[in-house]
Image (cartoon, rainbow, N blue to C red; front, top):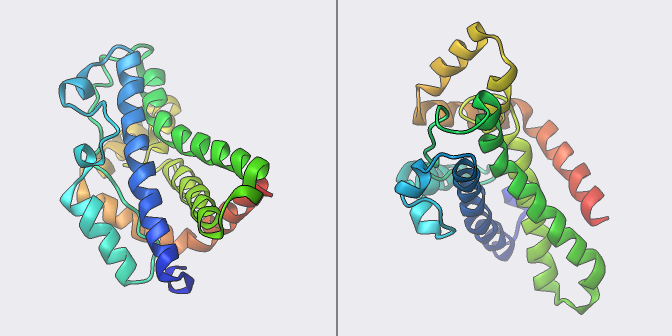
Length: 209
């Protein structure tokens, strides 16, 4: 995918991630705070400042490695901490916290898509190109994070309805931490990469036209 992009398009891709990922993470914290858990606030994570969400391995080294092997440079920020036992509505509240991140991505994609449909003729070619890539990045983040496999956000929605034996399996996967993140992302792109890309194209076409 990245091999077909120009240097400027790759720059737009990275800039889009730098904008989209902190918003995604901050929304987890804001939703948890709204539901009664101030863990993220105490950790200083209720902010859109990208530096507050940077992790050496998943925000810098992981996307660098993925770019080197020709994969889209997914930028994974430090997970925003929250206490699922302190949020309202129990497992459903925890699911809302998990869904808040991907929801922010699809909402950003929708807002920019509406702007492109309304005012695209007044934009320069580079501005249009950046906004299109911004939509593509946010749609990609939405799709990937909604996959119900730990540690992805979609797993929080699955937790809310899964039987206890499945929840225990998911907890074991999530306990591997950084190693599980690397494995899950490589598995997703190697096995489901074409399907994700096809779904992304369909959603982007639906939004932008």
